[in-house]
Length: 328
Ligand SMILES: NC(=O)c1ccc[n+]([C@@H]2O[C@H](COP(=O)([O-])OP(=O)(O)OC[C@H]3O[C@@H](n4cnc5c(N)ncnc54)[C@H](O)[C@@H]3O)[C@@H](O)[C@H]2O)c1
Image (tube, rainbow, N blue to C red; front, side):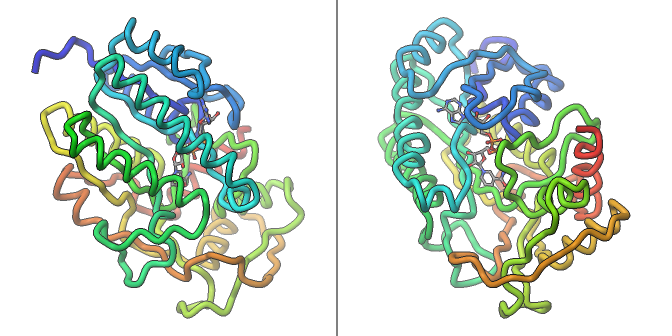
């Protein structure tokens, strides 16, 4: 392959929740990691692994200089804004960062001759899917600027790949949750919006009650059903995707989930069991744009990458997240 030893990996957004878990796993596996983050939406507390470069992706010249000096083998791109309702209120902020700054990153890579890319995409690209489990070939109908920004980047990557400008793996994450089982890192969101995190923070007393948005969905208990994946399994999927690209694999788009759905009520029940705290729950109306059920078809990632999850258990996911919350 003519690769340098060790393999050098850029992790944009590596101070954030998912990027920091991936950075840790990469370092533990002997890869060299360069973390790029502007700390726009993370505290810096998770910056324990890899060499940190406090750069904004808007700074294409800075990126290009770093890439030319370090010549990384792969870029993993996590940096983005991620709060869906905020994207509806401030679309330009989301398109500017999630699309515009991804273009600057891709341009800096191209100028430096770096051709392997792993992209943090999202199940949000599917919008409200017509059939469940949702397959990678399903039409992309995002219903928020956030989801649209991910779909746009996927189109740009597809065209660049077709033109031979790079090879990429786009990983469409479903609901990512949990924390490093060793307790070193975990979610550090400045705006925690994810259900499991909200539930645990409510148990801790950071919020007075937890809201359930909609109890009249066409699901077994009336609440929305989601596919939760442990952040360390997701980190493993990134390593597999990188190894796949480095051994010559062609561009791919892959769902990342377990293919199993859990309802909001189920999550709440387990969060109460894990924490031993009977926190207050209030049922309110539906939120616009929430699909009733979002569960991944996961055969493709298993087949293409040989992905075999280790933490496929919602209780364990919530337990690891709680161990982190309790400490922090
Ligand atoms: N968390 C989920 O459930 C989920 C689901 C689907 C997709 N994703 C995607 O995964 C990626 C990581 O998400 P996360 O949950 O770790 O979010 P996060 O907010 O914890 O991490 C994102 C990081 O990117 C950094 N960043 C943002 N804009 C930047 C810029 N212009 N320059 C440099 N750094 C910048 C932030 O400071 C932050 O540290 C995102 O692309 C997100 O869209 C997450």
